[in-house]
Amino acid sequence: MREELTDTLLYLDGISVSFDGFKALNNLSLLVRRGEMRAIIGPNGAGKTTMMDVITGKTKADTGTALYDGRIDLALLNEAEIAQLGIGRKFQKPTVFENHTVWDNLDLALAGSRDPFPVLFMTPGRGAQQIEEILETIRLGHRRDVPAGALSHGQKQWLEIGMLLAQDPKLLLVDEPVAGMTDTETAQTAELLRNIALTRSVVVVEHDMAFVRDLDVKVTVLHEGSVLAEGSLDHVSADPRVVEVYLGR
Ligand code: ADP
Ligand code: MG
Image 1 (tube, rainbow, N blue to C red):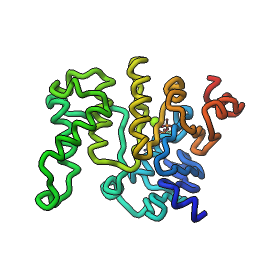
Image 2: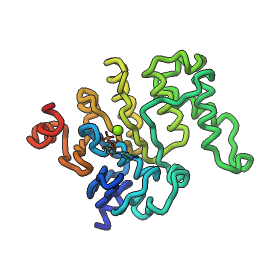
Image 3: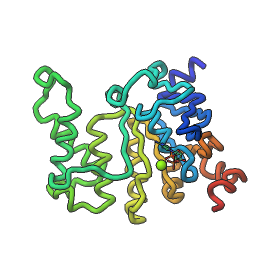
Image 4: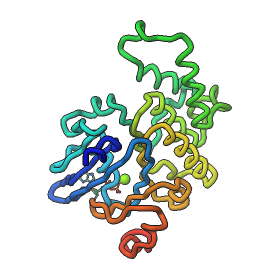
């Protein structure tokens, strides 16, 4: 148990959440290791978004334990405090500043994440270098001077991921990132997230099976608020219960 905890960044155990008597999460347990990327799949209403709400403090669990970094009890913290710990969340709809350039969007995100004592820690040019690195990661170097409003839908999603990276999260939560993307953008997003997961943990919820296959990571199948199956995509795809509730439809 102890060893398990030191290697574990996110530990959910027996989490339940009810809305007016309906159990959106039902005794959910999930363990994400440091540096691991995990894909979460499951039918609509399975509780995927609610799980992210619990991790980020938007929703409080009725029962169960949610530990971050082995010891921090997320139930005791509010959303802002949890974000401060290095848990970043990307929502489905991009929320970039359309009238600002790609560069300025990243600059603003970086400024917003800076230390409250900038004079003590500021290094000239550090921000610009960080923005360059993020631009490379999110494949928008060639679009840096374009207003974000002129980007394609997929590129906007990448920009928003870049704005989260400006906060240097240790755990990045991404909810349905490739919805509405072209096939090419979808494939590029898998590669982009794999790069991001080289330096942090990532939990990605997605329905697109080609994308999940490209991610090539352990998959957790949620159903009715609990874990139905876990393992490689091939492993869970061969599970008759998974086929019945999700893949076979
Ligand atoms: P998923 O993301 O897997 O599609 P959700 O986590 O959004 O599923 O929802 C799980 C269930 O909980 C759904 O039946 C949904 O209607 C319900 N639910 C989610 N949030 C709320 C809420 N704030 N109030 C009432 N019911 C909710
Ligand atoms: Mg959802």
